[in-house]
Structures are given as C-alpha cells and as structure tokens.
Length: 138
Length: 421
Image (cartoon, rainbow over all chains, first blue to last red; front, side, top):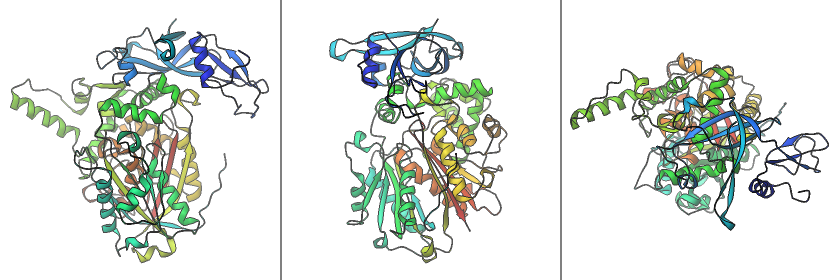
C-alpha cells in the first residue's frame, strides 16, 4: 500500500480490493478522497494513505431516468431510474457514488441525511473489470 | 479575497448577431455562423469592412466528438474571409464563447488589436439524446461520470441539497420555467417561442382532433406536474427544467473604445469581466452555490466599480431551472436562499424590477453550448440599445446589463457587464 502513487489509478485499484482510500497530508492533517498527491492547503507532497470506515450520510441525490450507455447496459432506463448521490463520510469529506437499496422511481421516499454504508459493485471480467463505489442505507 | 484588476484600455461592443437557435437538419456549423455573422454586420450602425477585423476568437465545445471535426478557428475564419488573420478557438464547455469574448477583450485592452470578432458555434442535433448526454458529460468530473451522474443529474443533486437547506420545492422551479417560456414567446430567434399556456392549448387541440381524452390542466403548474407532459429526466429535474439540444451560432464585434464612435453613436462599453474555476461536486464546500461564479462576479464588480443592485437586467446560465435560482444568489442579486422567493414574487419577470433571461434563457431560447456565451450578450446588446422589440424591458434609463455563463458543472464561470453611456 505504501508504495502506491497517490492518483486515480491507485484509488480505482483500492476500490477493486474493497477499500475506499484517501490521502492525508501529515503536515497539516487535511484529508482528500479521492486522493491528491499535492496538499492544496500547505502544498506538502508527503502524503499518506488512509482507509475510510465506509460510513456516511446522504448529502444530495438524483434519480436518473436518462443515463449514459454503461448504465443503460445494466438495465436502467426511463421506467427504472437509478440513483446517484453525494455522500458525506464520517471522516468529514464527501464522495460521489451510486446509491443502492433505494427506489429511484419513488424519489419522495429518499431522504437527505439517511445513514449509509459503503458497498463495492464489481462489474465485468479481467481487463474490462471495474468497481463502482456505492452506498446503501445502513 | 481581494482582486485588483484593470483593463489596459477601454473596449466597446459595436455589433452583435445570432442565428436562429433550434434543431436544424439542413444547417451545419458553417451555415449557422454565417447567419450570425451577417446579422452582426447589419447591426453596425456606420458599417464595418470585414477586412478591418484583426482577429477571431471562437468558442466551440462538441464538434470534435459530435461531428468528428476539430480545429474550428481557421475553418470559420476562412468561411467569413478573414484568413490569413489569426483565429483562436476557446474551449470552456458551455462557457466557451464567454471565454472567446474575454480573450477578445484582453487582446484589444493590451493594445495589440483594435477590431476583434468573438463568437461561438455548436452543431448538436444530429446525435441521439443518449449520445449528447454522454458527450456533454465529458465536461463533468471523471468521478461524477463514474458515479452515473449526467449533467441534469448533477444539477438535480444540487437541487435536492438546496431544497433541504432552504425549504424550497419543485413547485418553485416551475416559476422559472413558466417565466422563461413567457419571455421566449416574444423572441422569434428562440427554439421554443411559445408559452407553457400555448403548449397546453396545442396539446388540448391535438387531443380534440384525435378524439382522445382532453387533458384537464387548470393552470401551468398542473401541466408541469403531469408526468405524461413533463417526465423525469434526473429527479427533481424534469423535461421542462432542462435546456434543449440545440444548433446555433452567435458573434459580437469588439473594438477599442477610442475608435468605437467610428462604428456607431451608441456603443456598449465593457465595464466588467470576471472568470472563475470550480471543483467537482464532491469537493465543493457547499452544494448550494458555485464558488466559481462568486469569484467571477467579484472580479467583474470590482473592475466595474458596480454593485449587484446596479445591474438592471441579466442573462444567466439557466441550463437547468435550479441553476437560474442559484446564479441569482451567486451574483448577489438576492441573498442565499432568497432566489426562489424572488422568482415566485415575480421580481425577475420581464416587467419586474430585475428582469432575468428576457431572451427566454437557455431553457427556451436554446443552448447550442459554444454559442451561448456571446448569444447572451446579443440579448443584452438589444435590450440596452432599446432594440428588443416586443420583449423590451420597461425600465427607464436602462444602462447596465450583465451576462453570466457556466461551463460544465461549474468548472468555468464568467460574468460580463456592459454599459450604455
């Protein structure tokens, strides 16, 4: 873990391993998720990896009826909308993620502030495999 | 934050034109830009010899991937006979031609050029909705795209955060839509130059003719609440909260202030320009405003010495209804959390104290993304010169107008303030 560069490739690889990781600047203590290699507060470059506990609450969301091709391929469409959201983690930072376990066709039932737990959605095989960051109500 | 900026010398707008905005099977980028250019030439009161144009700055976002042709600066330069004068393309997603305008201002203010053409063009309608949605998402952050966010999705999420913080609801967004349509009804260049009431009547007429059940909408809001008339795109953004897919072009002629009177007795002066950049959705300090717009606004206000209340009319970047409300607050026209109330009270109507998007806005005038920034300035040009026809605002001594653009999901934001003296 220590040798991995603080970039999106490492972030994605960690997701595939079931870990939500960020970088922290040891000098000023600021946390970044996804990771940054440069601290934008003190401009320190000595980052360290930190694993998130994976708990948070819903800060904003949308139920998407017209999605991009990769979501349509998963079976989502105008009759079956999916939910994407902004999640505020216990550690105090926010991430964007898919929101599972809620009904995208009943947006009035989805509440901001709902406690959430991280989930990793593994899709595809081999070189085409990718992991989507997701949360569901805890 | 303190910003201290000044222009090396004054810059004026002496001509402005746009094509009709819409979905055109038989019109491409070149055809549309020629239409805008010809109209611009016709608006220069004392005429301009196109050979006197020193340079072109052109905003364009999607042509590379929608029509597989890049490098639009020289193509448009050649189209209008400007070669071998320099042509530079600017790209700031939906704010692309707002950046072209700004670069043109800098080029003149520096003393390098005296006459510069700035504009934008976009050809979007030859692709499917899904392809356009995916293409536009290229201007979002990669994290947003992977989480499934589309453009309407990002603004939808911001709307839920705004609703939760300020107690607004979908009903308030409908006020923006109804107003935009009422204004666009008076704009022959608009893609949808019909009111919501007109659309309701058309639907009722069609149902009658076909012998189908006649919809019983009592008012515009009931129409907008009807999921058959106004389906969800990315909740709470519905079809009538979203700008359309559009083709179109627009351009503005900039000259050094000292020679402005050679072209017209009634030039508009560039008194404020500002630009900011913003973070992705996850990294925003607050989900209910755009840091980049606030920065751009501060820059433009400081340069002009004007305050938000001095701006008499404005075109703002209403790519989605919630965006218009947020911009009203970010530009300082209303306090945070008060924008939706101002719209509800009619303060932003054509005949209100602060008319917003008199053109119909992106929602109804159309949003050919690269053409939008200078397209907004075409409206401000018409209004400030008293040439807006049926939709001319009834403000006495109308002198100060502004246009605000937003690129991507808030990555690039600008504010331009023009003054008639």
